Structures are given as C-alpha cells and as structure tokens.
Amino acid sequence: LQALTEALAHWPHHRALMFVSANAVRHFFAHPLVQAAGIVPTTLAVRCWSPGPGTSHALRTAGIAPALIDAPAAQAAQFESETLWQQVAGQVQPGDRVLIVRGAEPGGGTQPAQGSGRAWLAQQLAARGAQAVFAPVYERHPPSADAAWQAQLQACLAQPARWLFSSSECVLNLQQLCTPAVPHLFHRCAAFPCERHHKFFFILTQETPRRKPPRGMKPPKSACAAHRRGR
Image 1 (cartoon, rainbow, N blue to C red):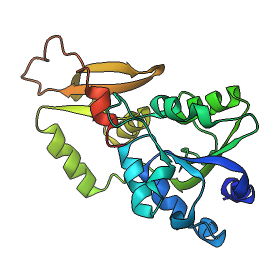
Image 2: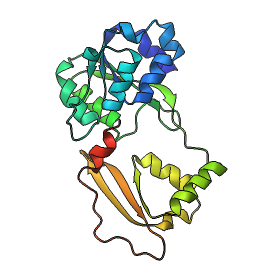
Image 3: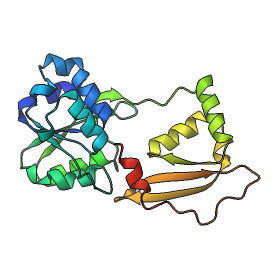
Image 4: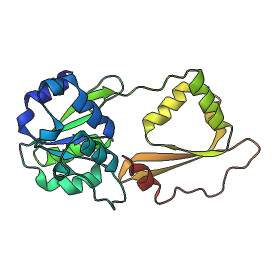
C-alpha cells in the first residue's frame, strides 16, 4: 500500500496513468485509497494509457472519456508496451511522472521484473527525463491445485492439444503444480519472440505416447497478435 499511497500524494502532477490490464483498471478505481482520494473515473482529467482493446474497454466501462484514452491503433499487429509507446511518446516531457497501475510481482516486490513490458516502458520514460511510478493494486497468485483443478488438467492432458503460455510465469506455475511426469507429455516446444528479443511466447504440442510429434511445427505469424488482441 505504501507505493500507492505515495503515488496518490503526487496525484495532480502525473502526466498520465498507464493501466497494464483490464484487471488493473477495475482494481484501481475500486481501491479504498483511490476512492478516499476522491478519484472518480467520470471526472478524471488525466490521460489514460492502455496497451490494448481489452484495457481500453475496461476504461470506457469505468466511465473514462474515450478522448482521454491512448492505445495502439486498432489494426496494430501487437498490443503491448512497444506499440503503445509509439502513440504516447510525444506527450512525455522532462520531469513528467507517469503512474503505472499494475499487479504486484510474485514475492510482493513493487518494481517490475526485468524484461517485462513495464520495465521496458520505464526505461523509455527515463530516457526522456520522465519518471515511471509503479503502483500495485492487486496481487497475482498461482491457482490452487485442488481436486477440481487436477481434474481439469487431466482432461486437457487426455487429448492431443497445443498449449499457449502467455508468460514465463505460467510455465513456472505449471511446473510447480504438476507432477514430475507431466512435462514429459510434451514432445515439441516452439518459442518465438515478440518485439523484444528477451520476451518469448511458447506453444507446446502435447501428443499421446502412440503418436509421433508433428513435423516442422512453426508458430503462425499471427500467433503473437492473436494472443495480444484481448489485452
């Protein structure tokens, strides 16, 4: 809460609010500290940055005026920090503060993981002489591996399928929650970058032991864009 409290203390001086997801929008405006500060979406005058149509929709639903929302073009190949920056870079001046509303990192840290889009955006702001201020308003946790979850997992494993992991955190969670035998069910893994060389999306092809893995599997060119469009 300290990071959000400090950010709200400088509320009138932010150039923009950057919401990393629709969840960030919902949790920010519902947060008791934000409501106590008298911040109401329908009367907000500061610009709101959105990485994609899902977040933009959440902003409009909350009551933000569409004219205040900056987001990648509707026909953008990807919806992420890089394409958003192309739209908003011209707004940033030396000395500006941009409040980045996001979820807390695993372990409770306030700074984003290196290699993430949020860290990249902070670097671009710093290069312009501006400051990125991070305000976690919700927490992400691995799912509970209860009986219902295990049943759903086994149902998925029982049929040949291609699994799309949207982040390295998803891969780590699966490794931690599954039995050691589960990773051996995956015969083929394709990783491909999205803009930044250090950011990867994974497609894993799951095959039954009696079937041979597919030959020459390549990630479709639109795979990144298809995943990011809902952000």
